[in-house]
Amino acid sequence: MGVIKFGLIGLGHITKGFIKDLALVEGAEAVAVASRSLEKARAFSAEHGVKKYYGSYAEILEDPEVDIIYIGTPHDSHEEWSIAAMNAGKHVLCEKPMGVNCAQVERMVEAARKNRVFLMEALWARFNPTIKACLELVRSGVIGEVNYLNADFAFLATKDTGHRLLKAELAGGTILDIGIYPLFLAYSIFGKPKEIMASGLFHPQTGVDIQVSMILKYPSAMASLYCGFVSKSDMVARICGTEGTIYIDGRWHESKGYTLERGGEMEKVSLPTLGKGLTYEIRECIECISQQKMQSELWSHQNSLDLAEMLDEVRSRVGVRYGFE
Ligand SMILES: NC(=O)c1ccc[n+]([C@@H]2O[C@H](COP(=O)([O-])OP(=O)(O)OC[C@H]3O[C@@H](n4cnc5c(N)ncnc54)[C@H](OP(=O)(O)O)[C@@H]3O)[C@@H](O)[C@H]2O)c1
Image (cartoon, rainbow, N blue to C red; front, side, top):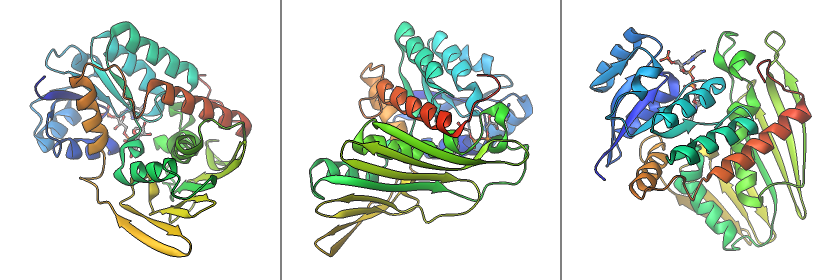
């Protein structure tokens, strides 16, 4: 197979980062973009040197040149546009979270199976070189029996109540937007927990969750996780075992290195990323599509389903349910 041709839907913040990283990856190219506004699509395509642009999402799905659709819209529309794209015969890379809840992710996975196309959640942290290296250290037993994880994701979010992060109609709030990352790390190290405890605080006007603490209990390990929109954090993640500790440099989900502590000795490892680091999930798409795979082995459909189930459980504990669910 030649170059994999991407069509991009939803021309917001992350899609701008995505198209810049796409330009750094060999074997992939952006051939079309789609926005709800034709003028916005035209300006975006001109800025990024993309030859085709559409003023509706439906139109790009009809473009025969497009192999894979990247979905960079708010959470509430991931299911709709992923399934529409797959029914049009396109492969899909869908921004995280794959769906708002587990039932949505199940329907998306079913659409991939039915249409025999590739579908992956754009959980870029899974492909980050530092995280891959740290998970390998854990697996190889370098820090002994791992029994504690401490990870968070926090930043000072906008006060604009019209922004998608704070809008319940768009499935905003911390859990789905950023809580997904520490949950992903706990899942990647320990698997699905025996029990999840969680508690949160809500936005006084819009009602979305703005601070959430999560405790995950495993047969012989605990994870203490947090996500928040109301302050910054150094976002160093700590993976602790009986023989040592791994400190993933902040912001850990897009890390460029880690420190390994064993017997009081510190070893610092630097692993710079290509571009912002979205390049690695793009490479995974190219590899999988070239090999006619319907899913990635590094971040499989089952992985997305498991994570969606954990997110559902956290939301249920905190009491977060969207009006459209
Ligand atoms: N991987 C990462 O590091 C990362 C970082 C940030 C966000 N994300 C994920 O990427 C997705 C988009 O986030 P973002 O921060 O890029 O959001 P954003 O800046 O608000 O952009 C979202 C885009 O979606 C389109 N859209 C469709 N329906 C919309 C609606 N009802 N309201 C607002 N916009 C709508 C708009 O594009 P058009 O006007 O062109 O149609 C908008 O520009 C989310 O799933 C988020 O979790 C991932």
